[in-house]
Amino acid sequence: MVSFLKKMKVEIKSYKMDIVGERNPTPPQYYTSIEMIIAVTGSGLTAKKLERAISLSHEKYCSVYHTLRKDMKVKVDYTFENV
Image 1 (tube, rainbow, N blue to C red):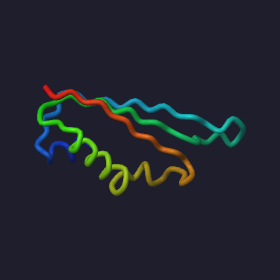
Image 2: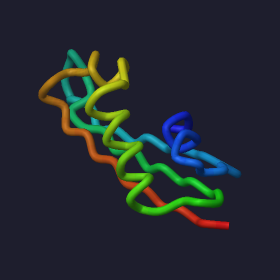
Image 3: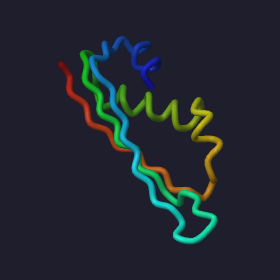
């Protein structure tokens, strides 16, 4: 995401991602869902740019996402501050 945002002329001051997950209660205890909460601060940020960077990462370029279970629910939320 950071490289996509930089290509969109965003100057990033801070970037943080928290991940919360739920696991299957019995073995095998794989993750059934995860939620990613992204917080970005910088100049030139817009919701449209963040949504595009998330979309590109999620749908096309993230090798980690594409190795996860196909039945796992993934939710992505974000906050941003334009400074």
